[in-house]
Image (cartoon, rainbow, N blue to C red):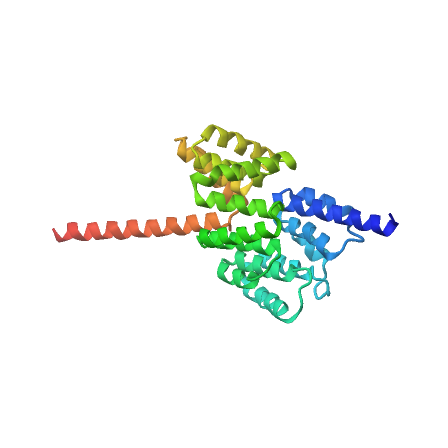
Length: 307
């Protein structure tokens, strides 16, 4: 084997590892695979490092490494960081991304993925699906599955997973997409999802993402002790993990724990994720509830005055 062939195989092996670590939620693992190769790595390999930085709220590294206006397709991830950092600029960022997608050939698929990510971040799941439509790239298809599930179109998500299975049934993303759909379908399919998450925990290593997948299965099947065990394990791995805190709130409610438990987890969510979908939606519903209560109280007071 020539030195060039050996280098290519090594690069492919690193890409495989970095990609899978990112998929299962081991973001620091993905970063650590890429860092030693950073000086010679191509855009595809580097993208998993930068996507991982975005996932752990370290997007400023992207802004430092990727200069504005550079020709690299990694510029797409710099724009994702800008949208995350300044949500008020989402429309402006999306205009730049969609112009790029419409005008240039996207060999790495990064521009399409980045555009869809920002659309999802802005709650525009239908537009994200339009950007990804027709792609046979597993990452695009997996992101489309997530969009469809957010839109409660489990039927279409299931069809898309079947197409992913035709392309590569054993691929990590295909297996994860199967698990997502199984969870969305409910109790009869949930055990299938559990087996996938369990297999990945054994094959790679447990991550908060995989452990929360197992926890949702346990919660759905009323296996509360098992749910508590995996959620505690997840907290050890990341003490302020978003999904873990939410699932601990659900578990506390289902098992009749004191309201102080739920309040503690909620306060942690407010502290670490003040602008998250969960907190934003909860505050919106709380405000609406207070408004209705006030309206009811005023109506009752008027009736009493009339008497």
